[in-house]
Image (cartoon, rainbow, N blue to C red; front, side, top):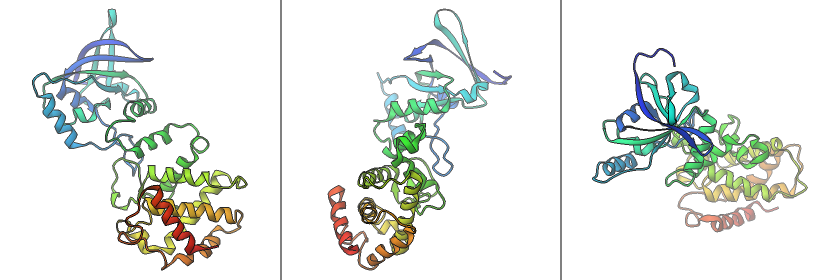
Length: 334
């Protein structure tokens, strides 16, 4: 640990939680709040991985923990490996240990305690905690996903994002996730920065759909492709981009006003991807997919009402999307 002017000493115990070494201790809530941080996903920069804080959840826990006989399970942290110059564990006999931690840099990453600790910055209430020792960010993120994957309020799109980040070969292991993320992160894609991951973003009003909705739709779409269609993932991605680029050109008002249109909502996304699978099945080889899609989709202009009070407004779910698909399929014809 480098020479730091102010540091705290917390006494506790060293042991293993499963196969991972951890430090167990007790400390006032306000000290743990001071020394820790939640690594919230910033969708614009791609940094972080957790959901945004929920102020109401934190206030509710503050109210609860101040009641007589109140308690909670130990908070879970990680002493970040990347911040190891700001903390040190001194081990002694019988598993006893002392955590020395800097006051100059938050180095306890909140793995499972973000909302319990969020509103306790001035509370002296003692809390038990466990800190994994020196996990790198990737391992910490994997543990967070396992612990919180079924937590109430945790966005399914956020867990999808975690999965896409943790897989070693995303294009091979989960091509639908690979394409969904690339559609959002590729500046040449019509979906660029319009897909929600479940984190924080400065462009929230531009988000048209969620990562969960997009990747599930792509998964169904890919199952419908003919066996003879043996395009690689790069070619398939280019076809999808070409298709949605033409869709955007055919329905510019609907595309630019997603709050008043169902085109990029579940019913529109799913039905249009069904249509794309049909178009590929009808004619799987093209020198110019752009021209092909312009030829096929131009007939829809002025004939399909995607408005939020139009014919698709009161249909939902997969059944409703299938109904919408039958309507647009009839418009496009053969």
